[in-house]
Image (cartoon, rainbow, N blue to C red; front, side, top):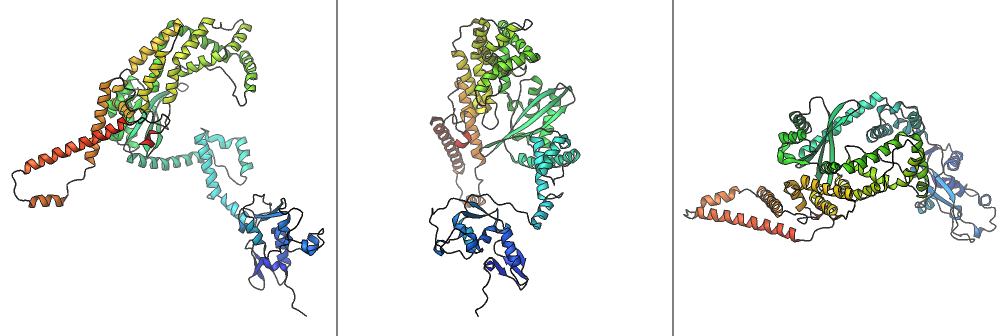
Amino acid sequence: MGPKKKSSVWQFFNKIDDKKTKCKLCQKEIKSAGNTTNLIGHIRNVHKAAYLEIQPKQTTFNAVTTTDEISNPLDLDTKVTPYNKMDDGVLQFQPVPSCSGSQRSGAPLPKTVNETIDSDLDENVTPLKRQRTIQAAFKDISSYSESGAKTRKLNNCLLFMICKDHQPFSIVENEGFKTLMKTVAPQYKLPSRTTLRRWLDDKYEVISETIKKMLSSIEDITLTTDIWSDTLNMKSFLGITAHFGIDIELYSVTLGVYELDERHTSDYLSEILLKVCQDWKIDQENVTAVVTDNAANIVKAIELAFGRRKHIPCFAHTLNLVAEGTMICIEWRNIVSKVKSIVTWFKQSCIASDELRKATAAATESSAGAAEVKLIQSVDTRWNSTYYMLQRFLELRSVINDILFRHPRAPAMLSASEISTVSSVIMVLRPLEAATKEISGDKYCTSSKIIPLVRCMLSKITSAVIEDPVAKEVQKLAINEINKRMGSIEHVNALAIASILDPRFKRMHFNDPIACSNAVTKIKDLMKKNLHSNEEPESDSDKSDKNEEAFSLWTDHHKLVHRNWKINKSEDVLSDELSVYLRTPVGRLKENPLEIW
């Protein structure tokens, strides 16, 4: 009588001792107790694809009548892949089209299911869900403890959401938010608003120290500052932002918003600016420029704190003043007032707003993904809001006219000549709007664009063919305001140097040759200063050699020759390098000048 045949289930297990075995598929230890009952149960419950392999052939494939047609069931209509990781011990199977058509493969069964698994690792299949192990369940529970990994991650995400979306701390007390978090992460314990406030203060302390350390090492920093008012609480605040570059990337950091509890004198504002620089470890010498509006008190404050040459008027604010200057024309101001009164009436009348919404709904629905078209109200401190108000009014003028006609108490509609005036003035003001949009960015170089923008803007406005008399007056006022406020823009050293050193512009947009020459001279001086600072000091060995030289009456002459030769050489090299740069073709407008350099 031959030896007893070993069960096929042992191909998936390694025997540890007489009472324990280890599964080859999931590395789990199974009690065997001298029989294979537990082993078969483990394969049947956990590794279903492997269980199919060890089943009797006649029960697995009743339709097969010959042994020649029998093949591995995993090669027929089943693909086996691991779920996430092999050590999870989760396998699944899903029907897939057979590769061999009606003829089944005659290949022998693999010794282990691992061979089939390895060949199918790259298949895209859906895992079979099963109950988690006790170890995985305890691990998941521990991750939601007070110091667990998932709790820390959710806490950071919650703080990020509050800061990024400007949400109040009380959001954690809202029933809807509680329900959401209970559904998403039932084991997560929401922190209180007091705890969130404390965490945010702690995180601010850590991040601010990192920013301070970084700012202390930056050699060139630009500050932007502005005063704004909270009309609801009748308070004023001073906002300060630092801008700097690292390699070719530009960064901006909001240093703070500080409440102004005294009169806005230049001395008071300069004290705040200097204190902010001190608190954030910013050396005053490293502040290359400070951009503000044109208010006299803040301009004087910058002069007291950093010097007059470091102040640069905000270009967007200057454009706002140019647009306001066009309102001197009484006829144009009256037309704008009429449009504003119509928009105000629509904003205050629910009936009129509903009619406008219904009238524009058809056009909105016909354009896939188009937003609802509404009238835009102007804001006194943002001139381009007036531009957008007039532009939208022209787009909806037909609908607006019909609605106003049906309401006797509605304000009067603009006449045909007034609508023509609005259309012509928009053509005049369009370059101002484009320049405002172009300059309002912090992720690309803007200072080098100011002189080119002024020249292009002035050229567009001057060359516009306008026939309407009111629009002609507005055109004339706009040109005069630009020349008045930006006529000497080329003499601002920082802007002139930035424009020349921008490979996209160089000297192309300079109208004043003296201003251009002064900027080039300033660039040469900066290059000389940089060259001298990089020169290596005379070594001690050279000094000792000179001391050992014999007496010579021409020693002083040799020193003068050496000094003259060094000066001439450095000047020639710098002049040649700068001349070659200025003679090369300019770059494309869409290119990043920092990458070119």
